[in-house]
Length: 455
Image (cartoon, rainbow, N blue to C red):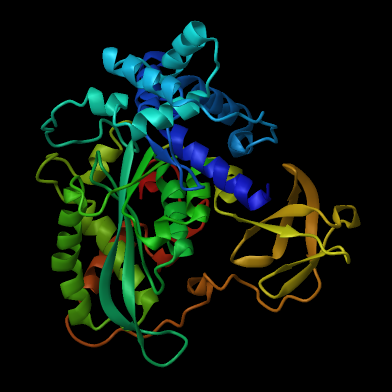
């Protein structure tokens, strides 16, 4: 089994248990969550639809708490071959399920073993019951319930994210313009605009940059509710959430429950984009500085119609935000790729060649790196550090997926009445004067305690 496949399996297993690993859950609450997870069907990396027993889920939770993501990687095993199961025994399993719909596949397997002295595979029995249309979910289906409006009960319990398509902005490094995309994260409880940034590209690294700045400034969320866009569906983004211990949830197409995000998008269009277009903003740097000043001075400082509080006041009601461990944040946003070490003790990554320990020749290793700095590559072999990969000649200094890491050229603002300029001036004065480059807020460690931790 390759390292890439092991990583995919570990990420899949974390997606199954992520809802149950929160430290906020009591043992009784965790038991209810595990029972619900065990009743669901999951699509494995191999494309199979499977259910997992409570014992399996509990074992994965224990492994994740002990060893992190590495504890969820599969280990080599040798299964015994099984003969073809008779139709009579499968028919018996169906009759047992119909007689008592609440019987589990494990219980049915036990009954058949005791009555016929034949030990069947629990998985085989479960799959046959599903194909026969007698799964417990089908036999005990309840009428759909009507749910009221949902709201998180505390800050950083749920963050909602989206990508808003904005205006065309002149490209900083070549002729023409690019459509700006706003990656935005909102705290469901306080309605605080946690962090947002206008990007040139709609890719994985853009989503990671915004999430990294958000957790550095506001703390780590328990749940992250995102759409099915490509930036949020990659294994690298899932790895970031798994390392941070965030339960990543993807909404279904046209699903309900994203009304708050849609209203915020409309508010941004009506209150910010109209002014940005009128001011004729000419660069992404200027657009981001103007937007972050507007977010701090207007969006997060207004009294919300539903909460009757400003987002800042509601978010800070429980005191300062607990900052995450910088080393944990650094590890979460590194990328991981698998490579086989050549006979010359080298590996290749994005047209760059790296020298590794000669003792690794012929073995698969995991390369962990910051895509914005390809000069530093850590080598992991079988879950253990194996030194660093030393570059021969670096032809590419950043990953091709991070053009936003390249420096931008700042342009002068245009003439006329500049509403957003006034907003930015007010925010600079509130911060004690001086120029503020909000695009730099994505860097770890920005800000001071208390109010700065929220801003």
